[in-house]
Length: 308
Image 1 (cartoon, rainbow, N blue to C red):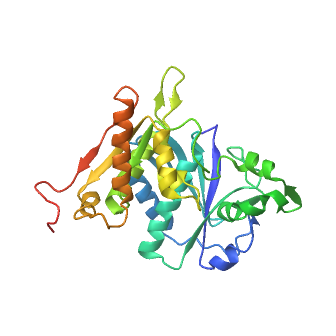
Image 2 (spheres, rainbow, N blue to C red; image 1 turned 30 degrees about the vertical axis):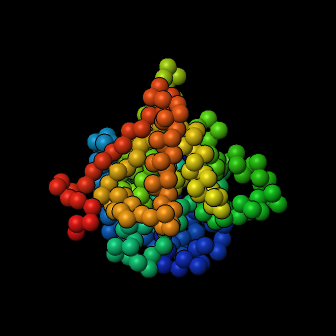
Image 3 (spheres, helix red, strand yellow; image 1 turned 90 degrees about the horizontal axis):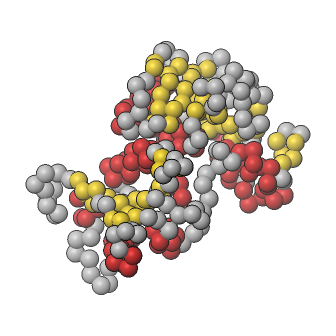
């Protein structure tokens, strides 16, 4: 894609050495390790996720693939000489692709390469031309971890960036912080778990680049994994986000309901049940025209709560 943004997946068996520096040279591959087979395994999981999110038909080759998650297009390319993987994103939501590929790389590592660590790095200039190589890469997780000290300035080589400059240069890669003032089109309420979480992830990937209205703006989705700031009171943040949403989609699964079985007055607060009750209260107050509830229900056919 001509109009794209690039990030890099860098791997190492010496995580401490890799995580020591905020910025490294692109050609500085001393601590990098790109095992044979890792790219193909990551590609396999990426194709599976593309199919799960109804992505476009992939174009595959040995060291390169043109894929999409939902309608988020990207090109992923193995760079054996630099011992890393480059991803070029042709989408206005590059963080979605970055987050998903980092997760999929983590799955590959846990399955067959447990000593390996994955680092997401971005060009020190923020952006790159399609055929341009970066001079240096910035460890995005380490940059985010230093956020409390951004006001003191962050040194990238001989350049000291102020907080506003950091936000401007790396905004497309920085995680979402806090709740949107303009609210959300849909709020997903679900029980954390392997199946339920995976379904919400696929729904988010499918929805976040759909368009609405005459201006064809994108669908804004509230998903707690990317919308809530560390250190916030989660129950209050959930409530505020729901009040700012056009509606709620509860994920009503057997696993979600199991924990609600036998709840008593003295039982600990069940946040999922709390969200569903709040959704009903908001719906009753605002009505169908201003607030919707669209549940997604699934489970084993003929199963009952309490059965194995």
